[in-house]
Image (cartoon, rainbow, N blue to C red; front, side, top):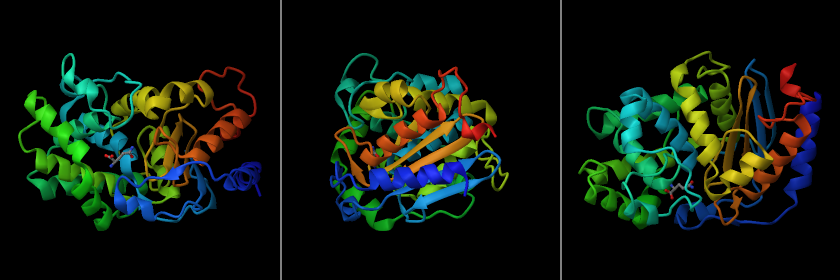
Length: 316
Ligand code: GLN
C-alpha cells in the first residue's frame, strides 16, 4: 500500500468519529442523507486513483456544479462578455445571500454564489431547454468519464422550495441582468445542482482541471485549456463562500463545496482531491471535509504559497 493510501485511511479513521455539523434540510430531499457517509478520493494527473470509505455512493453535486457551468459559459461567450454579466469578486456573504444584488451595479459578484450561478446558467447556449440540459450533461460526462443522470426527486424538491433562488432571479430580471425566461433558467440551474456524482467522480473532475482540462483517465478534453485558470481563480477566491479567506489561508488550493457534503480541490498540475460527508457547518461546507483538507495540505505541503517543496507526494 502506498504512503498516501495509508495516510488517507488514517484521516478517514480519525475524522470519521466527529459528529459536528448538520445535514442540509432546506432542500427537503437532501435531509435523507446519512450523516455517517464519509469518503475521500484522490486522482492524480498521471491517472492513479486512491479511494477510502463511501467513495462510490451517489449524491447530488449541488454548488460544485457552478464551477463547471461557468467553464461552459466561458466557452460559449468568452471572458469579457461573461465578465460584464457576472463579476469575480468574493462577497464574504453566505452562498444564498440576496442583499448585494440590490446595491451598486446589480451585477452578481461572482459565479460561485447562487445569484451569479443562476445568471451564468441563464447564459448557456442551446436550442431550447432540452438542448441546453443535454449540453450540460455532456460536459459533466467529459469530466467524470461516464454518463451522468439527474436525481429527479432532488430536482423536484428544490424546484418546489427554492423560493430564495427564485427571488434572486426575479430581482436580476428587474434590473435587466438576466433574460426574461427566468423559469427556464431556474429549472436548468436546479437540474445542474441535481446531477448525481460520487466522491471519486469529484476527484476525477478536479484532476481534469489539474490536468489542463483533459480527463487524466479517459484523455477526453472537458474544457478549453484557456479557461482553466479562470475556473481555478474563482474557486480560490470564492469557492468556499464566507470561509473562502480562511480556506485560502489554511489549505491554500482552489476548491469548491456543495451543501450535499462534497468538496473538491485542485492541486494544479498534480492531482484532484475530493471528500464527501453530508454534515455541513453554518457556511455550508462539509465539516469532515474541511478537517481532511487541512490535514492533507499540512502533510503534503499543498498550499500554493508554500515554497518549501517538502513532502509533496504528488511530485513523484
Ligand atoms: N442547489 C443549492 C442552492 O441553490 C446549491 C447550494 C450549495 O450547494 N451551496 O441552494
